Image 1 (spheres, rainbow, N blue to C red):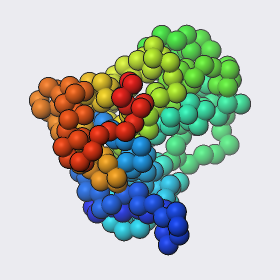
Image 2: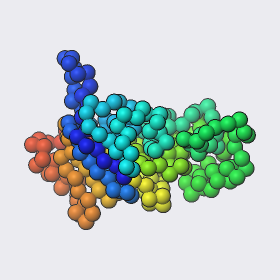
Image 3: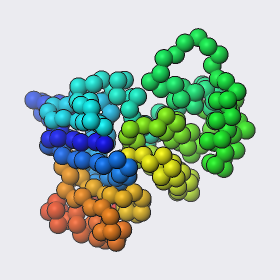
Image 4: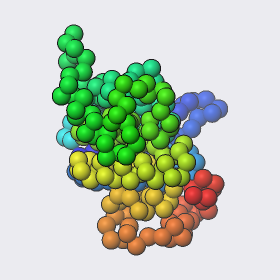
Amino acid sequence: MLTLKSVTKTFNRGTASEKPALRGVDLTLNDGDFVTIIGGNGAGKSTLLNMIAGVYPLDSGQIILDGNDISTLPEFARAKYLGRVFQDPMRGTAADMQIDENLALAKRRGQHRGLAWGITKEEEAEYRKVLTPLNLGLEDRLNAKVGLLSGGQRQAVTLLMATLQKPRLLLLDEHTAALDPKTAQKVLDLTQKVVDEHHLTTLMVTHNMHDAIRLGNRLIMMNEGKIIYDVAGEEKKKLTVPDLLQKFEEVSGGELANDRMLLS
């Protein structure tokens, strides 16, 4: 479903603040893979997702999604293939628009838009149906402005928006990091449910090593712009947090320096 071939990216090239972010990353995801990504500060995790989404141009390499070379496509042209949820709950929704209007925008992603009536009764019924399992009471608040919702509620709506039109690839960039632990757990449970139901190929960046082990069928560890560890299947299921810390020291030659990861 996704292939990265020798992808490189350096920021501020040729200046005193030059920063190599990705150093020849090779990665292949099969259809339906749910891959969690961990690593220290500046490891290249978020940059990797941004490169796939087209936020930054490639320095070199190739990105192939579902057989199509998207390496040179601008960000807006890739949007119809991708679903994305950001760390900041405010980024994925339009605060001044209603819940049903936000969902309608997501429903029409990549489609031609005319001057017909905005939201049909059939669509309203569909939105109630997808909101009900959240157990947040949002199915009865379709006309509420999204800006009035809590961070967890907005993130749940954003996740639904990202997957309403089944994307070829779902990108989750620490999408529970700004939430309290109880709400974060609800959003993670919803994430697993949505990914499983729709058989979505998914990349999830997280600082929580327990979540990285518990969720998905594959885990990759990054350090200094490279993938240094890639584990899947039964071997991943048997991992513990001490195992991950030991593996990081073995392959990187140093201790993990990331308070958020260690404290989580």
